[in-house]
Length: 341
Image (cartoon, rainbow, N blue to C red; front, top):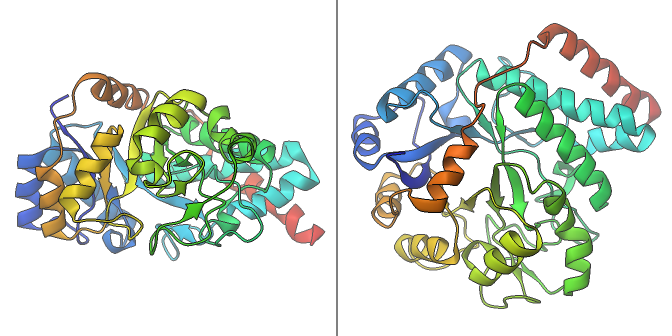
């Protein structure tokens, strides 16, 4: 796999000449799209085709954060406005089987929407378990408030994406739900004891450790490493993510440009790889930052390359589910929540 170990965003609705040359030269493993890159289904399809063309790979991973609720990049009028995970969790609390079915169906609908436009990786499911007093950056993005419910719903969501040929990314490993601040803006510090973290926060990630890709949490867990967030902590990656949780898939950082991380982009990137992440993720599309991250990024080789290759298995291979039937069934299930409120 002739790629470098980073996933890159970019600036607009189509690639600039500078971005096209940069991607051709630097060969990122994958790309990520945001609302700024999306206008219509036809435009997004053309954009994804240009990313495949510049990479020279039909199976190049093109990522998106499409959860539902507050976090969805595809929105009306061209796409459906979907409910947040907490609403699916409310149905699970009424009827577990129906809640699990709704989680599967929503992910299957995401897969219809995404794959039709060329996007083949969804940064979903969110496996964070929120706690009272935690910042609402997770909030209603969570499937519930117990690790058992989050694990079950996360598994259903993951399976729905896979059925539609879209690969899932579990996030934010080993757990962001207890963070008291938004890691987009500042560094969360969690001082909870090890026993509680293992039993609650880390548990859903252990339950889905077989998923091929995961995204780290920019969170310090003082019980293990009081100096570094999980993303740049060799202790957290070796002992907890790879060790206790048992995740052996492709580990990507959360966005390297988030304010939770300190230092310039060179030092941030080096710290991410030094800690043991396989891939660095850069999202905001600022060209000078992209160049700096690329300069500090190694070729994708060894175990990381093996994990990346595994992550591409079955990408784009969907079942024969009927989209209209899935939409009708999902809508009928969500009406049960509305009636119960």
